[in-house]
View (cartoon, rainbow, N blue to C red):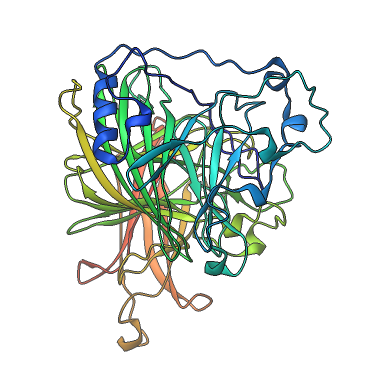
Length: 510
């Protein structure tokens, strides 16, 4: 899950496969003209054994290293659909380096399916001297989508698909950060993790004046196939609507629906901090979960030497997402990565989200170039046969922040030891709550702190007004026994026992 390409459109993941189904299915990629025909292809493919296809990349491109591959740039004037006025248009990535297995692309116009063929003339090879005898790749490695120039009065690349089933989006105000995936398979649970590929894409031919781009994608992997429909609307919030029909080729331990990954190296709550000039380094600083009827949860991210796994079980999920709430450049001091301008992502279920759990995995890391945070929805019930497809639909917003309704939101999390003691001190800042302006000046909310272990003792809990933020600062101290290695904590502001804030949660590990 590397994230080593700051400032470039590359995605942190594996290369893709180019598949031919001539001997596998009655439906061919060239037969797909809509979502229903794509579902038929995915279903038929799931009833066949998985057969990864060997790629045939010329040794010259096969052996390209990073410095060589980055020389190859798509020519902007060659973009697909670029000559059709103010429409969405596509630019492609050249195979090579980490991305060696080409993908199939098609254009669907008025019910007709046309392949998009590789052409070396679409690329500027920079200082590379490509021998005339070098064979062309059989396809492209991935693609990016550009909005009509009239949307932002500039060239605006807002969506990239490249590597396994990974994709990323940006807004008119925020840059690349979090990576989404089509599906996660066996990320946790003991079985080897799989990374199915989007092997083919179909572009629904754009028309001038349309505000959304429509893309179909075929997923294929050892244990699962899938038909996907993406509808994306770029803007200050980039909206995506995802519809998928998933066909399990063989039983799996777990599935992750609407999965995405991010990076958290260290933050205001991290101890010890790396020897680095920057105060904080992360793409996201918390997981947000909303459950119908409550609670609204903010899980502050952190990492240590061991993996952290958190499950938020419910059958009434309203939404979830990773977020970068800290927007103050002074807290990052990074002019190149601009971590304070990374987007948040919010998932709103629309179909197929029943009983299950929002799953958060926090992996140890010693650098910023690897995504080490994974969040997803894990359904409790997983179909075990391709004859019972799992149908899901959800909205995926890339945005500055998803607000938790009228509740006071968590602003920051800090922790340390009490002076001259081994007791733990937590300091959690909340924004103002609804109705604060109408309350008496000396009014204070109640603070409710809980731990999942009776062995850990809450020594003190209180709240005070924070004149710097206009909100509230909650404090509490903990006496944690030497035998305790893991502790779940929560803190909530209340008025007459009714929540007026998000429920802050945290996993402490020794």
